[in-house]
Amino acid sequence: MVRFLLSGDAPRSRILAVLLALVLVGLAFAPFIFPGVRALHTAATICIFILLVASYDLLLGYTGIVSFAHTMFFGLGAYGVALASVHMGRGWDALAVGTLAGALAAAVLAWLIGLFSLRVRAIFFAMITLAVASAVAVLVSQLYQLTGGEDGLTYQIPRELTPAFRFGELFGVRLNGRLLNYYLVFFTCLALFLLLLRIVNSPFGRVLQAIRENDFRAEAIGYRVVVYRTAATCLSAAIAALAGSLYAIWLRYVGPDTTLSFEIMIDVLLMVVIGGMGTMYGAVIGATIFVLAQNYLQNLMGLAAEATAGLPLIPDLVDPNRWLMWLGVLFVLSVYFFPTGIVGRLRAGR
Image 1 (cartoon, rainbow, N blue to C red):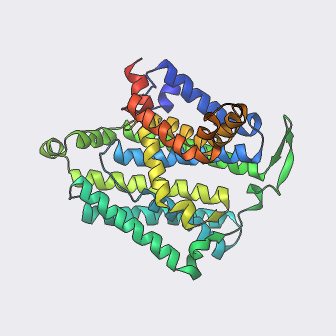
Image 2 (tube, rainbow, N blue to C red):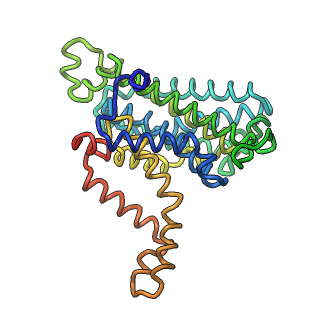
């Protein structure tokens, strides 16, 4: 059963299998293991970014396409839910329409970009996607009456997904709509991740890997490289938009900084590199480590600074305000010691 769910793509490393099991169990029971609003928000963010990073790895790791427009598709999904909720009101129909509209808009835009750009070489395509993503971000900021501009949009979602909806208590944890919202995010991300795993291990996925390794040979044996690349781009964009929709449902707020920022694109790239390109499991490890570091590294450094207060120099080095510097150091070390990513290294050393 497990082998079927994983599409025959086993971890192929005991350490990796244990790590993946720990992440799965931790996320599945996060509301009960790690009580608190911040912990639950961190767990939901990890779920969403695992899906976002996995969808980007379909492009970068499996197809060899470098794109800087992935957060644009993520933002389209988020704004789809936000606009539908604002104009249609508080209801499940607004969430469904917004989610489908966002995914469809992302796929169509990806198709248009691919149609006109995928025939060029990698760096030129990357620059085109960067230009389009920047233009969309500026457009969203300028269309204040529609998108809320820099202030973004705040909206209501069905009451069943908010803390106001309460239905008991279990193991000392209050059962409310926020918990239902979390499990909506968790199970949807899990299902879409398993779908991506199925895709990359299908004949379609094998062709994408062949194109990544040598597109000239793939073309020579009869595969229409541009068609496959365009299909991969559209699929990746649609799933990124679905991740954005889940993020919008979770946050109940959408703005340029939360969904369209180029910083998010850089974070996604870092997660792919840390976890390992060309492996879906890399998205799980990379996103988990990065999001945990973003949320808790500063707190750990604060504790370290207090513990070493009587020592020279060390308290200044571990000052919480320097957490971004240490995050950068951790990234450099991970690239140096794990050039193929954590998953690639674990699989090679099994």
